Image (cartoon, rainbow, N blue to C red):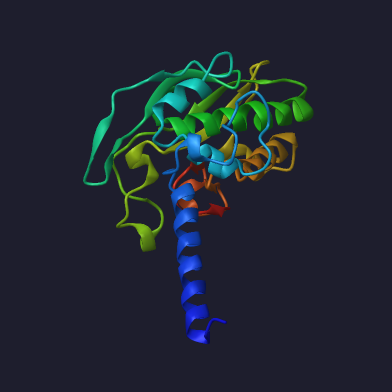
Amino acid sequence: MRSLGETMKLTALLLTIGVGLAGAFWFGLVPQSYSPFPPISLEQRPGWFVDLRLAMLRFDSDLCRSVLKAPHIDAAPVAEVPIRNGCGLINGVRFSSAGGVRLGVDKITCEMAATLTLWIEHEVQPAAVARFGKRVSSIEDMGTYDCRNIVGNTFFAHRRSQHATANAIDIAGFTLEDGRRISVLKDWKGKGAEAQFLRDIHASACHYFRVALGPEYNESHKNHFHLDRGLGWICR
C-alpha cells in the first residue's frame, strides 16, 4: 500500500504529464500521425476537438498541402521568413479566394488559412443566405502579416501581435453577390439584418479562432474584426 507521500508524488507526476501533453497539443507540437483526432477537413463543418485539429497544421507543411485544396481555397505555399525579434512566418500560404469569396491574402499561416476557410464556408456563407438570400462574394481585409506590437491595449502593448507572425487577419466588411456591402464600422451598431449578420458571424468565429475581437472590445476595433489563432482565448 502506497504512503500518502508516494501517492502525492504519483499524482503530481501524472498531472505534470497531463499538462505537458495538453500543452503539446495546444502548441501544435504533436504530429498528425500520433494524434487520436482525425485530420481537419474543409469539406464539412467540424465537430469535436476542432481547435486541436486545427493546431496540427501549425508546423506540418505536408498536412497543410493535403488540407488546403480546391475548390475550397486556392492556396499556394510562400517562402518562410525566419523568426527574428518576434516577427516572421512559418508554414505560410497565399491565396486569392477561400470559402467561395474573393479575398486576396499575401502571407498567412496555414493554420489561419484553414480556419478562415472553414469559418467562411460553413458559417459566413450560410448566415448571408439566411439573412439576405445571397452569398458573400468578397471580403475586405485590413491585413495579415505586419511586424508590430499589439495596439489598443496598454497592458499588452509591449507584446508582439499575432500579425507579427502572420497568424491573424483583420476584416472590415463583406460584399454580397448582388453588390450590397456590409461594413463593420457602419453596420455593427444598427438594428437591421446587416447588424444581426455581423453579430452572428462574429459569434460563430469563436468556434474556430482562439481570439475573435470586434467593435465592442475597444475603440481600436470599431471598424473591423480581429481574428487569430494565437495562444490566448477571448471572444468579445
